Image (cartoon, rainbow, N blue to C red; front, side, top):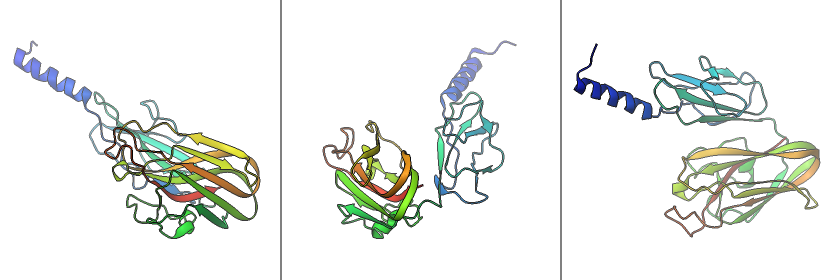
Length: 255
């Protein structure tokens, strides 16, 4: 069967357009959730012939990974679940990420903050240990700092055997809130235990609440010192370029 030239052109344009359209990412109720017995994670994306594929090891989903059909049971204390939407002749979606956090982290006796927040104070240092995760409203359940360097002195009632530390951060670039430039963790004597530096946010990125985890040398600690280094100035592409931004925290967990 020979197509009329005009019909052939319409068909070709339609096919080409579909191949350049990107699917929307799967939807899920929460991007961060505490581990609990029987925890299951669900995703939703409703489009005929589309599939959601996922991983539970933190890797990016591909067309060869498992297809999501029923809520995913999570048995690990800490996990990163990632999902993408796929459909023939369409570009795969961006990744939807769910971070599973340890609910039974070690008990923190107190956290001394230098400097202390002056505007976004929430419930003081207890905001960092109350097991209440902040959402997109940065005026609730978040501590906001407008300093370039923030020091947190974390004390335990007794020595704890630890191997991990995790901190919750908020990114809302339009509100001048960025992730840190670096995190450094020291022991009580000032010895550097671990550090992580992060690449510059060279473009506008979606709002997100993220947990950043670092490994510690497994040892018994009575206290830890955390140094958070914020961006010295906002990047050139930002409307507030050359001004300082904000660093927002909501949880400190150790286990």
